[in-house]
Amino acid sequence: MRILVLGGDGYLGWPTAMHFSSEGDEVMVVDNFSKRQIELNFGIEPLDSIATLHRRVALWKEVTGRKIHLHVGDLLNHRFIYKVLEEFEPEAILHYAEQPSAPYSMWTREYAVYTQHNNVIGTLNLLFAIKRHCPEAHLVKLGTMGEHGRLAIDRNEGYSINRPSGRTDGVSYPQSPGSFYHLSKIHDAYNINFTCQNWGLRATDLAQGVVYGFETDHTRLHPELRTSFHYDDIFGTVINRFLVQAVAGSPLTVYGQGQKPRSFLNLLDTIKFVELAVENPPRPGEFRVFNQFTEVFTVNQLAEMVREAARTNGIEVSIQHLENPRHEPEELPYPVKPAKVSELGLSPHLLSAGLITQMLDYIAGAAARINPEVFLPRIKWRQDSKMTVMD
Image 1: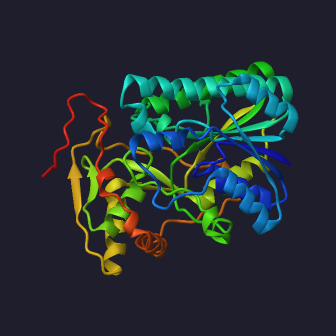
Image 2: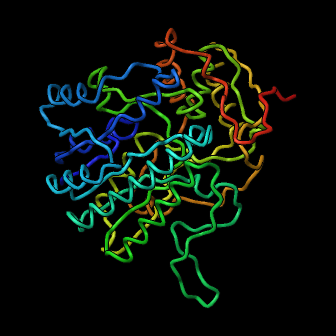
Image 3: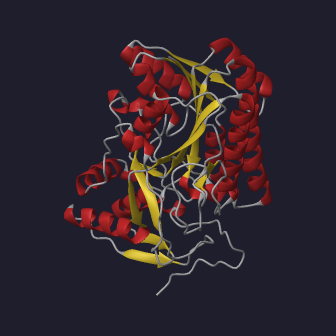
């Protein structure tokens, strides 16, 4: 197949591109490097330095003999994406090309507007380009479980609800997003659903949980083929932060009481989710949603898992609760289950003490590059929030 990976320089985009290329697909990656610019603006960087996308594409060809096409450009430039789709004629489009940070979107008016404009308008340009040049292509769009936010209602997988009469109608579930970033994902979902219904496009929305892990069979082929590992307060995930804090000998910082559950999945499984979606495309006119996660933990459970694995490896760390800078309930049921992808044959890689130990060992090898200055959250959802340690 001809597969277009938008956001191919990113944490998920690059290993996904290598995976499909290794399977014999013709792959093109597109990126505007906006995430790297945000890193420069805020003085943050991944734990290990990451080679440029041009270097990684060239190295992939040297190591494997397979070519990944590369175009540099921005989805906000509709002429650019029109040209890419017209020339490449992709059969599947994997869309990771959005500003991915909820904290960044909540910092200032400027960053909130940038997030929504970049994400929503960029996706709209893509939809119009698909309509014009490759209406049969399957759009696989990265969404987020965070779209459901603070609601404790039961939800089946997808965007339809059962009526008391027994009918099923295509009405979106009520949503309560936690940031302007999550709001942009909801706007995307409505726009994509609308174009499927009206233009006959086909799309899959992957409502993704928190992804952990940094290695695949392909990143191991050469050190410069690695993907990024962020632990900072803008792009870092909670599990990455805990792991790096443990190696650094710093307390594991839990926001609030840590009772709210969150969904998680391994990097290997997120790539498999995408592969299963591509191999099983929806019908023309169909917009479907896959809940993309394999396990659910509270933040406290996750912190305890990291602390116990660290202790087993001779590292003693404490757990410290901070006032939650986010506006979210302390406790919330998690009435959502991954259903469709399990039916397609996903065999998940679950979080284990052994895997946590492997990640701790990797981080220990790069301990000299750890910057403790980016552990604590600088961005507050609420104007009255203060960074105080809770008893």
